[in-house]
Length: 87
Image 1 (cartoon, one colour):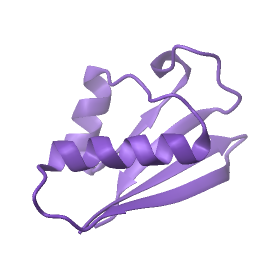
Image 2: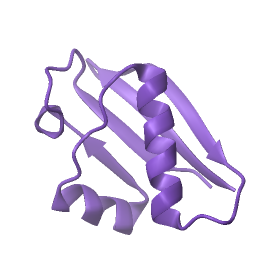
Image 3: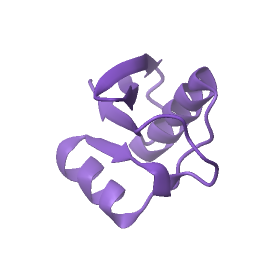
Image 4: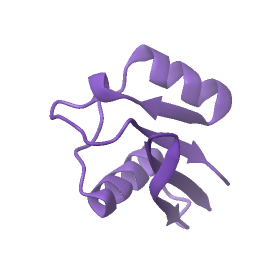
């Protein structure tokens, strides 16, 4: 099982959170990550963030990464969007 916890942070508080889960094992980890991010972004009604090299490095090393204003093409009304693998 692959689980990804998404959080919207504003003023140092979690204002929205959701955990996406995939039980199918026929996908690669990258595919499962992409599916879960899509599901979380739809739930939060935000656009999918852009991945920069720092995001890839953080996720590979720690299983989590943070997307700030520069990761979104549109303006956001929160401080950052964080994802963390919890399985």
